[in-house]
Image (cartoon, rainbow, N blue to C red; front, top):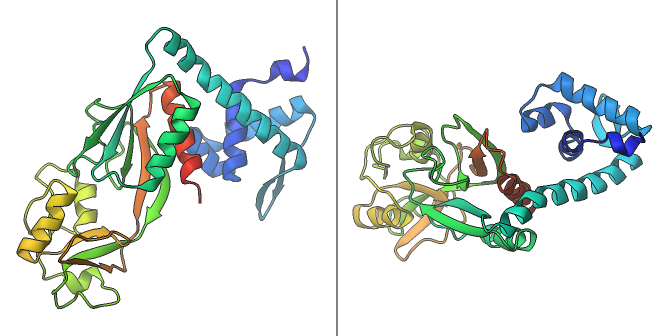
Length: 289
């Protein structure tokens, strides 16, 4: 048996994760495993191939020339392997994927991701379920979608997530608000103001983040449009993305002292569906800076 005969897709996935993260610890977290067996698997792979794949120094991990070649080959093999079940399912007329998208889905990267997914899986029928701001998992916890393109933070119990991008946030105010002309604001400067909030039962991590980091009183909203309207009609405060283009009569002032809003892809931790895995890989590639 030659060396290539001994290569397994699982080992190639391990290698690709380390090669892309350039960090054994982060790769282990991504693969949902501990670091020692991952390190052993990579050393066994290097022994099988008779080549050093990584330079390991106190400064970190880098690919060798042989490692760079294997990464190209591994990506091609893994991508091809991921397509096999989908193509078989398509031939049987059963290839479908339900994608949950949060609220106002105007993110241009969503368009790029849709194009990439269609190129890779032209026979898969994708159903999109757009949800309001009361469910940041877009129906994942309820089993209504296969994968979600959403924002954090939220309760990740039973889910796997990958961060794709982080967006700065701002305070949404009326254009005639006394604070509207400020170059930036902090949550403390808005502590005595009413904020829009989400209904009772909304994920508490999500609720707290979009309330400026702590519970605050104010009118209940469920959609992006409602957020804008309650600020316009009531003069309340809300959080939005710093680069958001507000409706007439509103303005956005950058908020400091709060972490940026993470765009994440999320999926059931135990779901082996190759269409989901392919969606996640493509999302990471499309959103990469």
